[in-house]
Length: 235
Picture 1 (tube, rainbow, N blue to C red):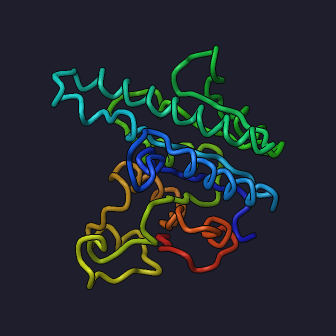
Picture 2 (cartoon, helix red, strand yellow):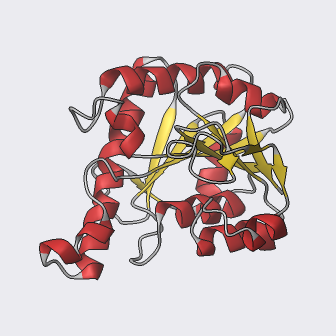
Picture 3 (spheres, rainbow, N blue to C red):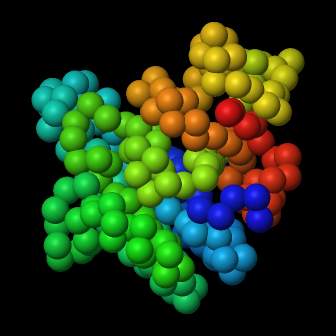
């Protein structure tokens, strides 16, 4: 394996599946669990951050007449719901997990403590980080970058529904071309929408590579961690 300890960032909206008929599609959840378990069996240490956009986005708050800070906290709670669903599904597959939260809620998860998180990873447990970093105005992308730096991950893997970073939106423009590799500076200068600027800058300043890949394609996660070309590497 090219990477020994990874931070996997998953989209909450991806859990809805293509039909978007339910907030959490059991088929998508099962597929993610199978991919993650296959990776864990290769002795890779895995931390996960999952979004909450399938349930509630902090950015929706203003349209609903809700205070932005309150809306962000609602979004954090949405990520905990997704994290609990993922934890339950993984444990059904016989995988040991720990759910750690940026907001204290002792009945359902541990508070985030950096040394404890690292120890869980060393013991082979999958660590899921919920509730963002516990503060408003920060996205789950920022959470992924920060937690990856804190637990000394080798790479941030951003699982999306497209197979990398393109010159323009491939779902709208058929002539869009995919980048296989980019430097942080190139990605910044081309204004490519990879992560929000806070998350992107944190990775750049800490020399933490980012790989954007298609999480919905079977076997892709294992390919990426082996170092095979299956997405776009930003480093």
